[in-house]
Image (cartoon, rainbow, N blue to C red; front, side, top):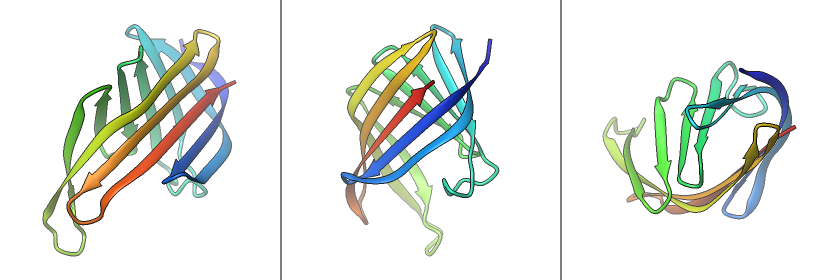
Length: 135
């Protein structure tokens, strides 16, 4: 069952905080894990998009941000995807790797933290960290 909750979403990029926002969201237990969802906003740079994350134990984190499809990150594995370069219209290989995964969620709420690196041959590697608290 989906519960209406308050979410605190924090994000940083290469160690600098880029987002710290409170928003309404939904929280539920699903398929042996948890699902957190919220509507994107102009402040987040995602106006009108539906965002969903699924968390399974300490191993798997699934992003579904807007219409971009699922990005499944598994602890200890590199996830390779392709993005389209808007300037050249060529496909760019992008790799994601989890550097931190801490699941402190229970049926009452809690917090999940995901640190990951993103790299591609053109811009190199960046570190991102996402922390979602369910209240």
